[in-house]
Image 1: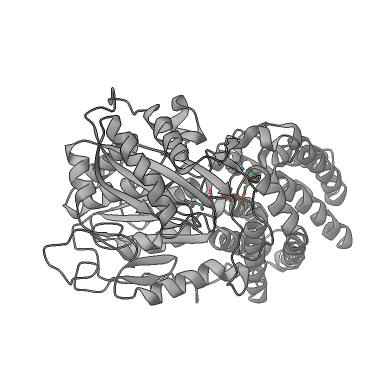
Image 2 (image 1 turned 180 degrees about the horizontal axis):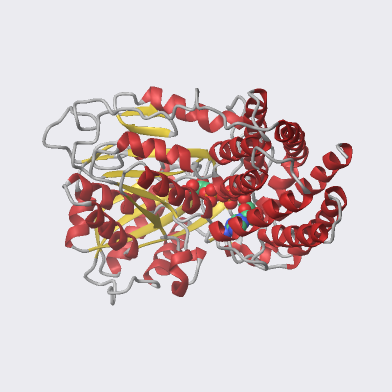
Length: 581
Ligand SMILES: Nc1ncnc2c1ncn2[C@@H]1O[C@H](COP(=O)(O)OP(=O)(O)O)[C@@H](O)[C@H]1O
Ligand SMILES: O=C(COP(=O)(O)O)[C@@H](O)CO
């Protein structure tokens, strides 16, 4: 239970502000996150990590000498937006390129990928790398689909230590790849976590039972067993990981491993040590040489009661990098040759801020400005609809996902409305109002749905433009472009149990209806009905994408959250069109 908060919607921002104030000798707040207090030395690759809030010390607590040069921080359980990542990366850049590192989650993959594109346009070379250590999130044959949990730390650290030693960008990336290929994690939980402001946990574990194979977002585990003793828990964790050795590690005997026993948020350190005692004994019996183990909270999930075990199978290089010193707010080891130089560099890191004020609005026709007023009403209605259904959307998302769909959609749609009000007040046309709303939605919400809704609004804005009055076929074309854009960006197809299952029939029905000359309001009505039917039908599907995939069976019988919210919006917008008819 998170007891101390103000407005849940700004919990992550306020936590970041307090963190930066508490550690200002080591980190500097910049737009989107934090960077080291001192500038990245010229010629050193900058390692910029990031992810959602709720995982402290990941990600901001791991910024400092020997570890990350910067961390982009998102909302609770939602990836930071591309804009935030770009801003942190620009501030951390030391002239030798940036390695962007994160856990393998749909939202992070989308936003870090887009950030890399924007950095390229800024003339900054970057690479992206997603950590995939959690063996319970996909079968060995599909290890690229695995999510990142506490293995984030050794993989980030290996790359960052390599950067510190002066390796070039692609060499640092190669180190990250090698460390990740040799890192495996497995977790168990005894109770779920409760998001700030929520009155019940994302999932519960029955008394005297444990969830096996949990994630770090309150995602339920993949199985359930009787509550073990500490020794039995240790045995389960160790035997599971020894049962899945990385390629090239024939048998555990004679191998060296970095070992992390990670507390997920509300397991006491003493409990962790009791478990670790047995972990060390069992690994010793298996002939594994444990190198500089870590026992403590390194990647958490709010107040989840759970533990995970991570093993990184070391070679000589990886061992050197694991043993290398680090000095961050939450993680310190060894010491640097020149002590007392927080964050390296003597020059403070420069902050990069995007200046949007004073950017001239594109000229708009009278017709388009009139249409912009309708667009504004639409965005008001979208935000209002999401507000009304936020709790329900969170509940649906929590069945097999991370429960943040309502919060994310709320932040995004509210920001979109705000940006649209501003743009409209300045005399923008419909296309520009939508474009501004798109950027605000993606930037404020982050997460998978933030990126995808940004794409939807941007496609609509491009189709409407700032000159002509929107016609029914033009609107239908915008929706069709949005549908294509979301599929291109997210890679999902119909049947994967995502919003694509609704967007495609919605777009197709609208296109078909407008092509036969149907007026927009009637065509939209038909399309909204198709969307509602398709959203309801997702209840019968098994997820193949996104956060819900590892919990496929659990999600059967419940519609996809993103599909449902899209159908709700489609219907609500029809109401606006009727009124403006
Ligand atoms: N690859 C994808 N393509 C299209 N939609 C997706 C994809 N992955 C997830 N989604 C949609 O995003 C929704 C989840 O959104 P949200 O919970 O806000 O983001 P996150 O999972 O990043 O927390 C899902 O319900 C699904 O509809
Ligand atoms: O918390 C996280 C959320 O990822 P999404 O895919 O946006 O839900 C992640 O950043 C943790 O690493």
